[in-house]
Amino acid sequence: MIKPLGIVCCGAVMLLLGCVNTPPAGPGEVASAYAVGDRARVGFDEIIVSLRLRGSNSPYQNLHVSLTAFINPIRKTSGSEWDVESILRRSEGRMAAKVSEALSNQPEQSIDDSKRLRGVILSEAQPIVDEAMKRWEHGEDYRVELAVSSLYWTDASVGRPAQGRGWWGAD
Image (cartoon, rainbow, N blue to C red; front, top):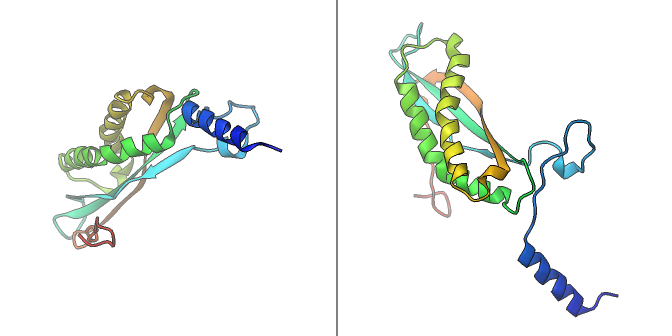
């Protein structure tokens, strides 16, 4: 039977040492279920930019872009995925602004330009994430990869729905 003092001591040691995240198993290695797949991911608000679209009946169409960040430790660390998520959330506004600016500077587009646009988007957003991670003491312990998880066109009447940031969705 474990005595109450032993439980308190174990709890204190765990608090003092903190949790340690380990990188996923390498190729050919067996891992526990929690280590298979990406350790965490963060989805960001949709970015909408009005652009000229070749072949469209109206002068502008809205390009809707969604980014997702995949988070994985690359070495043992006392940093946590929650810290990475927090850093990414605080970087979201800068990423959206930079992506919006880069897309606004693009010439007339066509549906066939989607692959190139994905490259433009990632080349603007990934450096913001990389710089933020460099500034964190455990940033080198994680690999954060951005991906364009959604990219589609709508007519200019389709925009972002109103989003409340208060407790109950109200501004």
